[in-house]
Amino acid sequence: MSGSLPPLTLVIGGARSGKSSFAERLITATGRPRRYIATAQAWDDEMRDRIAQHQRDRGGDWVTVEAPLDLPTALTSAKGGETVLIDCATLWLTNHLLADHDLQGETERLIAALAACPAPVIVVSNETGWGIVPENALARHFRDEQGRLNQRLAAEAALVVTVIAGLPMVLKGQLP
Image (cartoon, rainbow, N blue to C red; front, side, top):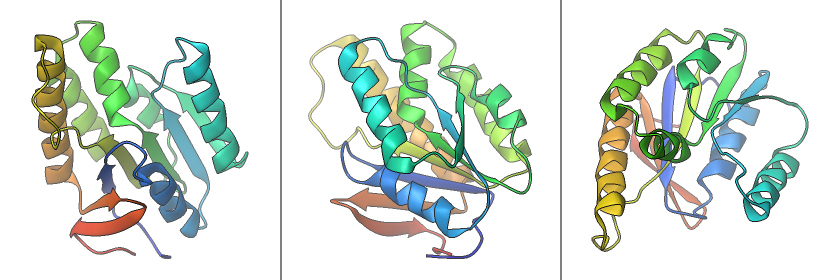
């Protein structure tokens, strides 16, 4: 993996599939400065530990921006000479869902900001639709909205890669 990235790449997979590590390797291979836009919120010790581990794993040479809700504003800080990783769209959607925000409106704002971003962006997202139908309405609503968001991101992206068991599989476009 080396070379330039398209304006928008979607890296999608299940939990612990290796999607974040793969996305980080794609960005590192460009040799450009790296910007990490984090959407996680640390509500408990376990989540704080997960976030700290992610930070240790990727190293200190990333500019990190915390944006659990406002990805469009975070994207405006990106510079044309760098690459951007959004990790992840699933937590961003969860944050908006739990805040009872207009998910369609927030998605439209995100898609517009991605299109306007001067730097190549990789968005990491979870594929949540391969499991059983959830037993409660909130979980079903989340699963449906995650599927819609992933479809919108995939439609806009020039490169879409799924990662399963650490192995990338190109669904759309070509790896650089």
